[in-house]
Image (cartoon, rainbow, N blue to C red):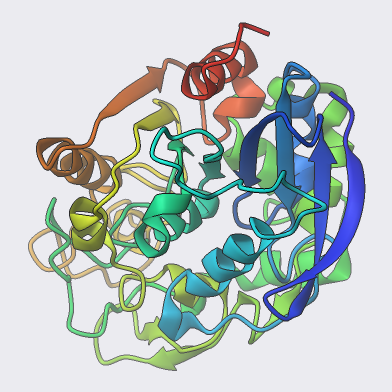
Length: 362
């Protein structure tokens, strides 16, 4: 499939959107992750059949969408509201898309990667009758990122210290803002792309510069990435603020496990993850508690006080509750795959997507 770029106004902001396939095709909404854009889906789009109507927006503050502020106290709802508004745009989706007719026809398959998985879950919670199925690719835990100690999301500290914008690598943020395309520095965006977005950098192939362009489109600042932080008396001395992306992901503001389980309309959920993911993992290299346990972040108070977040275990526990309450889910684990299953294992990923759309094999 070839995509075309469009610009629309929805939810009061300008949103850049990549569109592919016929207007009356089976609707698919692709939601990209943090520090990327809709360009991150281009390698996948080339593998999809022309029977699908694919809409891949840039989140606010990413790609070519408006650099609108992110109110972290709403969790990921700013993003979810933006995308819900797109379902009503007749230039993007056929009339009736996102409207439950009782048969399930016309409802989009919503695909979310990483942060985008959290946005997809929030979209389902807030608009349960507008989602036909969820495909979650290496999604953030339903209890947010960092700062919780067990499968039920119990806070490690009352203020969720060690999560949010204060945990960002400032060298990476500066290089991101400067558009650094080098590879020598460990915190350069290209080095981070190679080392953490995929398990094997060879998976990036000829698309590496395209994907780097996507990463470098991230708007930096207090209202976007990473956001604001506040001091904490608890280790490691920082807690989430109320503005910006990393705070929107913090468990202070993003905790929808119970709401997800309780949603009235429960579409099928497929959860795809790699067993070599170093970002969303029970041993995440982006979780300060885990880095503290390795001695990378000094002063770690120990396992009893500040254990690493069991991200994978939390997601599984919540989806098991979702299934027990009348939903259905399946977990697909890809051996040797990192944080980007659609890039690293595209054939398997496409098969899972088409199984949810009910379409033929690509």
